[in-house]
Amino acid sequence: MDETPILYELADGVATVTLNRPDKLNSFTEAMHAALRAAIDRAEADKARALLLTGAGRGFCAGQDLSDRVTSPGAGPPDLGRTIGEHYNPLVRRLRGLAMPVVCAVNGVAAGAGANIALACDIVLAARSASFLQAFAKIGLVPDSGGTYWLPHLVGTARAMGLAMLAGRLSAEEAERWGLIWKAVDDDKLMAEARAIARELAAGPTMALVAIKRAIHAAESNTLDEQLDHERDVQRALGASHDYAEGVRAFMEKRAAKFAGC
Ligand code: LHQ
Image (cartoon, rainbow, N blue to C red):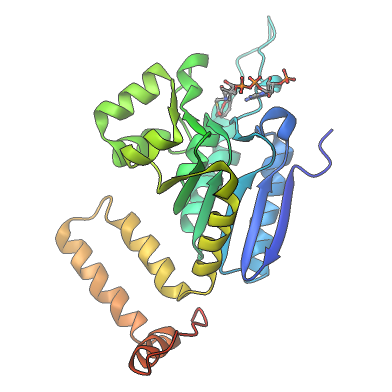
């Protein structure tokens, strides 16, 4: 039995959340989903200014734990839509909507929903030995947790089709070359680099960083005209922020800005 399927730690404004079922490559059970929701709640309650998501052991996350998904003869079909509607979709929406930057350190294989939860994060780093695997077609399913959305948006239709239909492994370096992730990093430097990025973001102008995240997501469906209007409105609001005033003052005084996140 898993005692603590999720680990939580807060330091320097960064909430580090670790998927912790290493023997099963951190695959998701309902208990792990519940613990992850609680950890994200805690990061918000702690007023963390960045969230760092990673996995314990040699894998990042192998998606749904399939061990409780074997259909027994005579039993009706499982309701996968319920699992997705109750757990995976809210998680993806939460990560995308979270009012702080989310960094993902993919420490090993990211398969199925595990790959797509990583891709829901704002900045994705991966260990050079890690890989991304849209495993779904191997078990007769379609990529979920946003997979059919991220893939064509990030790498284009041709590569999205190949990744989803052939369900092969994509190395971290290839994922970086294809624009699926921000960066592949030497294994022994992954966590140090991910923490440094998360700390930098946590010390940054949080309102602006969250506005950047939302504006870039809005661009996925906006026209240029809508996006220009959006930028005008957001900039107007940020112009009244403490961090803008401090950023400009610090520039003029030739010193590092001390952002407060408001
Ligand atoms: C696992 C799993 C796993 C249980 C490794 N479950 N034990 C949403 C809604 C509802 C239903 C369905 O799904 C979804 C979304 C999804 O995520 S569907 C896709 C589910 N995931 C997969 O199909 C991936 C399954 N795993 C694999 O293909 C391999 O394990 C990969 C390629 C990830 C890693 O391969 P290896 O490095 O060779 O490791 P391994 O296969 O030996 O796994 C290590 C252990 O982890 C092993 O347990 P054991 O007791 O034999 O040591 C695996 O059984 C276990 N494990 N994934 N998803």
